[in-house]
Length: 324
Image (cartoon, rainbow, N blue to C red):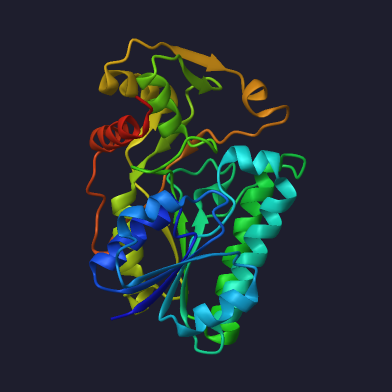
């Protein structure tokens, strides 16, 4: 029985990971300050004697260090997430992401605790080389665009993880997450699928930012969790950077149309300029598609959930959460 620490474990991905680890009879400790996570995400698991929840900050080393010391593996998911948060709090975004990751890695040094560090596809920035491969150059825009500050903070997380592996032999694995969706995800912080699904169910216009021709590849949270667990159990993944994502590309305009069809909504699509949605100077990424051959090679797992099934799951979850 492994002892697992999940930072940000009350969040969307974190809660699904905790659910999976408990199903495998692992002992799980969750550390979350609930800035974006919710206690309700873990409510169905609270009766488990193998789950311990602590409300607190990863930066509080007095709390963090003993938790990391007693763990066999740390899944470090805690971070400032969501484009709305990044734009509203650029200084806190950079500080939180970098300082928390360093705190986790530093705490892992004494026992050489394995750490899975969650990064993001945002690090690829404006690269026009699609699909994105882990060894590709990272192309960011001007520092006057706050979006790139978030990307840069996650790049620093990656550098830190690899540096602690090389210098202190902390067995770290960096995972770059691509547009993960599923039940319990909130659109409050800018995540596009739950936001559009909720609008469709409520009969509101689906607000697509920009032209709608920007494309993404969405991945079901169950596939991401499968990869996380398998990577944590594979010694060959240590010291590696690994894309976690699906390769089924779709434009946001087409995504909105599919959501209307899935929900049976009579809503229409409304295009909103970026500067109206996010403020002046917003920088968009036209295409964000991963090469996922590396994670498939390391884990033997291919994405198992189609976009149609993903949208149906999100719709069902959203309906359950809507007021009567």
